[in-house]
Length: 440
Image 1 (spheres, helix red, strand yellow):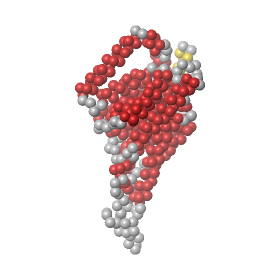
Image 2 (spheres, one colour; image 1 turned 30 degrees about the vertical axis):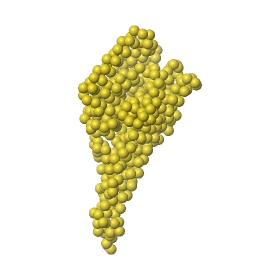
Image 3 (cartoon, rainbow, N blue to C red; image 1 turned 90 degrees about the vertical axis):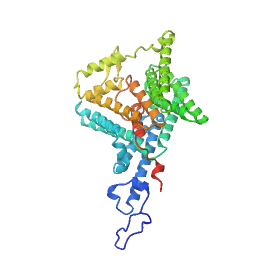
Image 4 (cartoon, rainbow, N blue to C red; image 1 turned 135 degrees about the vertical axis):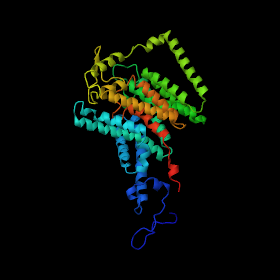
């Protein structure tokens, strides 16, 4: 009601009329408190604080992943994000559009199914509780991004800016160390090992590829020349770091990302998209044929198939000895010994999910990928739709050759696989941004 004030009470203390605190107070509401004096204002302030804490924690999580020396620093903001996420549950109007999204429902089912798998694996309740905690952290990350996006108009732009900037700093310092300080732990000293959390050439390549996709996308869509130059420079640094890692599987993923980005670009007609896709395929094929006739192919294949067939054969042999429907459980060892080497994991998220979660787990993972892809294809046209689709295409192809558990505390799988899942929810839900809810 307009014209009401907070002092409109009769002498008995009952409220004559409830003041209109505006759309923001009505949006952030808890039904049980909405009829109490000052209830809408109090709940509004609490919800605004929690969503701001969630947004800040998510940015700190992605930034510290690239810049933190170890996981302890990186894990702390994920705990804050989980606390904010759980604290927002009473605010039904804030949470409902996100938590009821089909992509998030399938994600939650997959995560908690895998978290419970130690109960039928090694039958260890303590380990199951640990993985349930990991599932809550990961779900807060995946659901928190669209929640923060709905409440803060510039959140996604800031989140991606933080990711690109942090990854470029990490890549630049890693390149400097690679040439000047010989910082190459382990036996493979000819490949760049990223600093901090990315002390592995494959993990470094996977982690740098996602911000590269967003940097290239910004280079294309931004209209101001200085901005384009800035994002192009960031992309060049990341590409150079990728080359130094010597990781071959990422180029397959980047090709798939480029193809997906071309086909989903709403600014182009269908005919132009098909022509560009055909050109990309032909150019890649010709480049491959030229490589076959040069010494570059021998250099690329110097590590052969990196023992992938042997690893996968060993995992399938181990899977034959467990329950095929439920799998061995996340706490099971997936080590494979071959040719005198010890390989610590299956090097494929599909085989890893099959081993840990059985046919049920693999079916859930494939269902999640299909649901996410379908959501992106059917989503309204926006500037976020193309990079979200490109990162998903990169994830589903590259992680077929690399990767382990999809449920872990924050690591590269959050950036490579779960980030495009979160963005699929963002681009397919109505963006009630901060400007909309603050109109008085």
